[in-house]
Length: 164
Length: 242
Image (cartoon, rainbow over all chains, first blue to last red; front, side, top):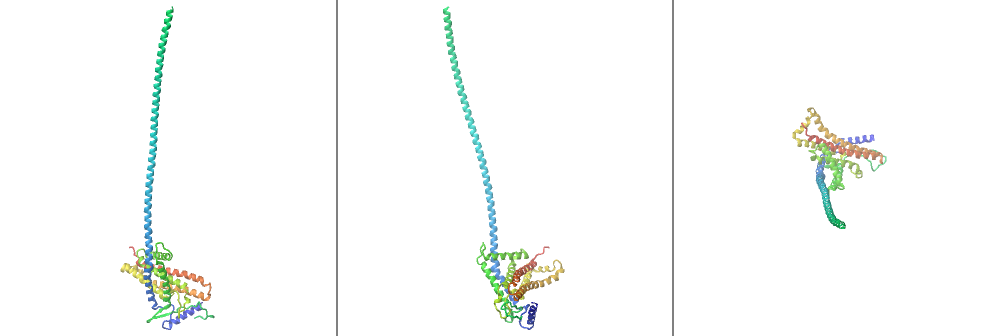
């Protein structure tokens, strides 16, 4: 391999020494400026065909993603607000229902008590009336009994007195 | 060139042989232009196919191109800085892509099947003209970047942080293109030579690891060239905070 490389170098060196364009590794010539022009042209072509369109596409997508993200964030906030609202309303409704239940219970309780009181009063009145009637009848009975007893007593007295 | 017992149809190696084109009294290395046109054609074909129908949900080649774009953008942004990288992204990207396809094209395309009267086809970056051309373009661009951004204040860079740095910074302006061009040229040429020599000695299996290593170095060299170019431009546009 070494000999081969030496040969190659020797070849190049002798080639370079014999005038005209005969090559060699470090053979700088008009290839250089033309290649530079070619690279500059390629830069402009690639800028037009590759860097600008792809850059635009990527940046548009980034813009799209960030706006959709902002949108989604906004919507999420809205949803959270609505959710809180709903929870509030639900709580209020629950309290209202609770209040109505309590009220209704109190109402029925009151009605029950009232009804009970009336019923009791009525029953007391009825009993009182009955008692008074009984009393009156009793008195009447007693009176007539007494009258009877008096009459009988007078009769007995009359008969006894008459017999003597 | 080398005495061979049997004339093998492959694995012949020529170093420093050029396929000359004559343009007036100028001499061109025809094989360099031919192979560079092939790889540029392949690159442009890929780009055209990938950007023909851009969609918001990327599919197929567009994915690859967007990955490349993002990769190059990150490289340029990291080296040049947030403020100026947009102006230089196409240049850095073109350097990277061109060197990359040249290197890989030189290693992957079976050039030896095409016979030239003199010289042989191979990676365009294995020719010193190509690498020097690109290195000089990098030098021009960082001067242009510095001067256009900071005007004559650009030359303050030579005396910062102390005026003692002046000669070193001036020498640097010469060593930068020199090292850029010779690093790329040397690596790619050496890779081609190693593969060529191994293929010449043992035509089966044995050159494969060297070929894989070559692909690896090729990619790394493209990355190094582009990164350094971006770094030089970044140094030139960098604003010192006093």
